Every structure is written in structure tokens, then in C-alpha cells.
Amino acid sequence: MSKIVFYDYWRSSAAYRVRIGLNLLGLAYQCVPVDLVAGEQRGAENLGRNPQGLVPTLEIDGIRMSQSLAILEYLNETRCAGWLPQSPVASAQVRAVAYAISMDIHPVCNLRVARHAVSIGATMEGWMQHFITLGLAGVEGLLAQGSPGRFCHGDDLSLADICLVPQVYNAQRWGVDMAAFPRVAKSAAGASALPEVAAAHPDLVKPAG
Image (cartoon, rainbow, N blue to C red; front, side, top):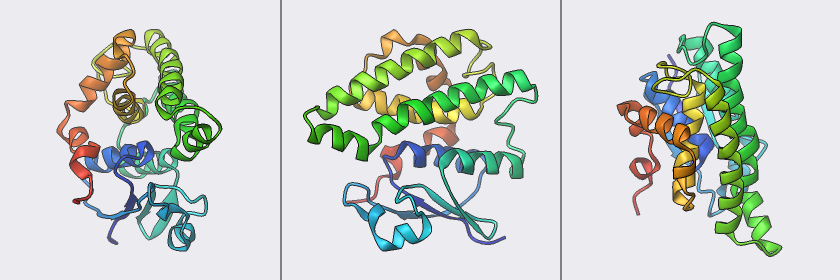
């Protein structure tokens, strides 16, 4: 099997998701940091492997891929991870939560979007708090409609949990009041208690210095 190489930024929510997935599958990988704050994502080297100028990028099975959800679904399909329920209805419910986070909250709170907002008069903290709070309110409602249990959907960890944990980290980082989202907090706490998920936390993978 070819070596797995993961191009990562420690605080990127998208990269955090993939770290969780790799850890859950027990896949060892070489981590290559891409410093988003320093702008390395826009350099020729990163653009050569990720034309969007983003992270993460994963080299695995002799191929290179980007976009965290595409990577996670590939891992789910090729490693039989079980991150999506067999029932089409349950699978759609799990995807709805994962997509609400990764396609609705995350893009608006992406570093390049938030920096632009600051450049035209917003504050970083105000921007993040507003959109994360708005987005998590929707996720809280989706979880209320789903299957109760330890995680986002029952007692089996799913793609929704893999997306939720990094988003809750960001919410806490920006001072969002999580008391308003008890289902979100409970699901994230359940997933974060797993050693493989805990090991992907940004504080544990932050580059030295």
C-alpha cells in the first residue's frame, strides 16, 4: 500500500474532519502542514495539488483528492467505515446534518470570507458568532427531528458527528453560547470522548513553535 500523505492546517475545520476520519480507521499518514495564516495555500506548490487553493488534500491509494466530504465519503466506501446508515431515510438525515455544517456554516466562516468581511467593516468575532449561532440553531433543529442517542443519529458515530465536532470546536473558540444547543453539545461530547476523535483535536496537532 502506498504511503498516505495528508496536507493539513491544524485549525482548519475541513482538515479536522479528515483527521478524525483517518484516526477512526486507524490509518497512519504523513502530515504536511500548509499554513493558511501565512498564505501558503495560495502558493504554487499547494495550487499544484489543490487548484482551489485550500486544504485539505489527501494522497491515498495512488490518487490525490481534495474536499473533506468527498474524501470522507471515499474512505467510507473503500474502507467500509459505516459512517452512513444503510437505510436511505436515515442516511439522508445524517447527510442533512453533515451538509448543514460543511456547506452552510463552514463556507461563510471560512478564513478568506471572514477576512473579507473584516475588510469591509465587520469584526471577526461578531461575524463568526453571528453565523455560527445561526447555523447551529438549524443543526439543533435537525437533530431534534432525527434519531436520539449518544451521537447525532442514534448510538452509531456517523458522518454528521465527524463534521459536528470541528464545528463545535470553532463555536467554542469564538465564544458562542452552547447552552442554547443542548443536542449539539451532547452529540459533540459523545463523539469527542472517543480516543480517535480526541486525538484529532487542533491543540494536539498544532505544529511546534
